[in-house]
Length: 118
Image (tube, rainbow, N blue to C red; front, top):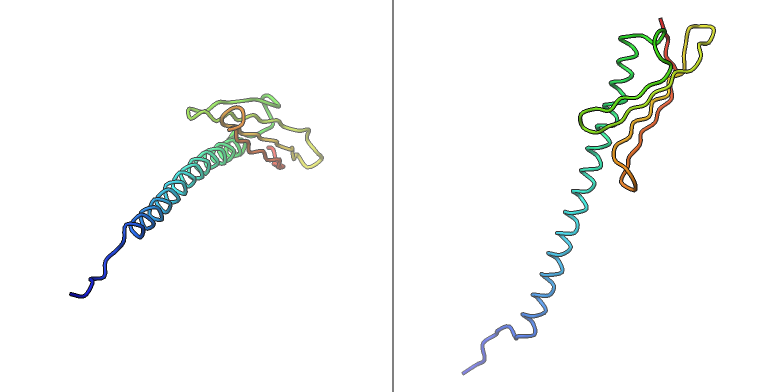
């Protein structure tokens, strides 16, 4: 009777180890993707907070009131802003810094621009 082709125990063990390595790599890449997604979400919130403050300057104006300030949003983003001096064309420099988190995981977004103040 001829021998049937079959898998040896060694072949099965090697295939199992290779499958386990592949699964571990997939799980690790999913975890890294989740961290990157969370960071992107936080950066998006920072950009939205900075845009909201710029829109506030456009709506309210920057000729009256304090020349600096800070605000904390409901989602934990802290926005600080500073207005520079007027130049000859009624333009002021505006510096805005948005921050979320503390320590090593803190994210910051800073911009400096110029706004026409009426």
